[in-house]
Length: 88
Image (cartoon, rainbow, N blue to C red; front, side, top):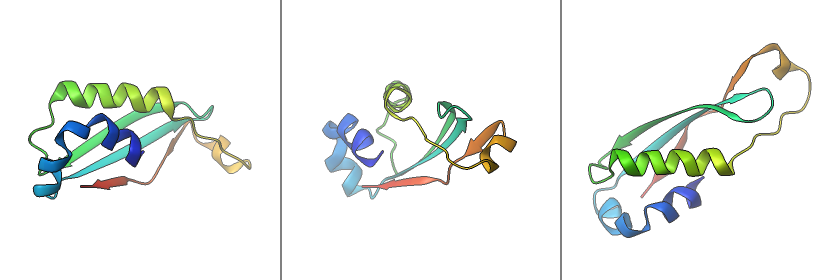
């Protein structure tokens, strides 16, 4: 996830590092492992546009697929993943 986001924002890395920006990503998965929902929070990342977030969202959805084992997850229609923090 870290690499996906930093690659997509490579032209802004210097300013994001200077501002000590943080992007938090919250993922929810369907039982089949596909992403059901993604939420973002941005701290000190004012130079990231809504369009760039939309592009990130598509890239994440196209590249991330969860794998679940056991039976416990089958009790839940959506499985929430702990927050992922990308610090610049």
